[in-house]
Length: 99
Image 1: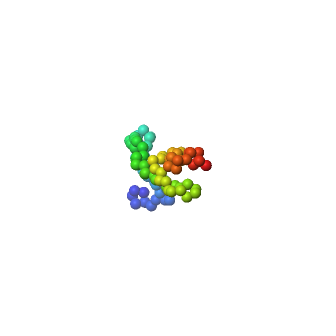
Image 2 (image 1 turned 135 degrees about the vertical axis):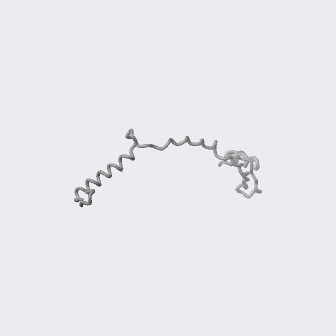
Image 3 (image 1 turned 60 degrees about the vertical axis):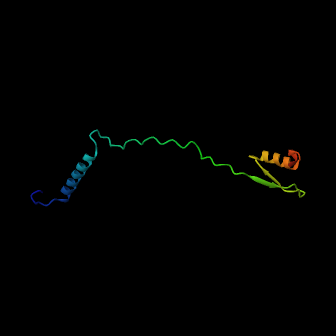
């Protein structure tokens, strides 16, 4: 074969298989374990929390059902406080506002 002789199909398959085995051998490390990438660095800590935005100043314009002057309510942070402020502006009981 090395002297210019023709190879038979069986000889070329055997030669190809031997070449494949030779190519696989160098890729493996000597211990038989594939090399791995170094470990990733630990993740950076998350930010301490959402950024603080100033609360908008809410102004609630309201009237009583029978057409009173408009009252402007501000300085409340929840519905309960809003009802109390409405009662204060119109000099009525807070229970009358909630109904």
